[in-house]
Length: 301
Ligand SMILES: Nc1ncnc2c1ncn2[C@@H]1O[C@H](COP(=O)(O)OP(=O)(O)OP(=O)(O)O)[C@@H](O)[C@H]1O
Image (cartoon, rainbow, N blue to C red):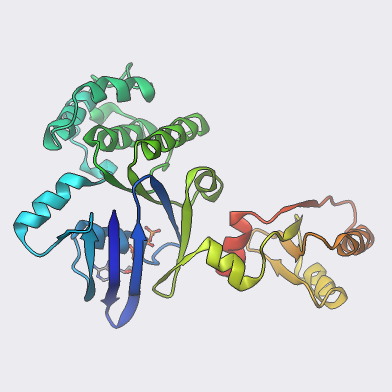
């Protein structure tokens, strides 16, 4: 269990984290989501004690804090941060890296073979990592953390550079680790993927961690539906806003227009469909439940 108590981090007069208080439990996958440069890595660095916060404390399992070097050693037995690809030694093989992590955390050596098999690394794990592709290096970094078998695992962009099959395999391993009672914190920009396995997701904004549950409630968008109009233009958005002033309508950077409406208002859907058919020649549009990406666009708009 990790308890963050009023964590504050300030860089050059800018609050990156503001009095953040939150508890993460065993058997939970936590998703951290935010635009680049918002504070996700900063939060992880505070949990690792790579960065001392300006205020507040982190407490582990109701007893341990970073008050002494001895405590730090104890905490780092419970905790691991997924290594970065730049941490790999090009002259060592994947297997040597796995053995290193296994011995550093004194975990069950059987986990090495199990993880190699689960991630399909058999064909290259004995080769030097200097010969690996980006995806192979990323898989190895993930495997190293899995082999460490720590109670708490922090992962920054775990799915970086992985193909869809690998993303699926790693997602399944994460779910399995959660079932074993691990606490896993993942910073990711792959929202659709995160939504599949995260128990709680937080958006970081203005130094705060806001749960998507709270955001749904506060924005009053629970159960809302969304119409997505591809190839939207500022003119079409303007026309829609005039015709439906009561609705939230956004033109996103990728030229998609998002029109949000409450689920039970089928009349609204019919009116918008009719309007689009009249004003948006030869283009299709789709209707669906509001996704995490939609919420993200709305929240960071
Ligand atoms: N040691 C530091 N000194 C000064 N500013 C820093 C330091 N570390 C991070 N920052 C700043 O704090 C902000 C948050 O950085 P952070 O690395 O936590 O972002 P992030 O959300 O993880 O971004 P990304 O998605 O790009 O990884 C950024 O503006 C960054 O420039």
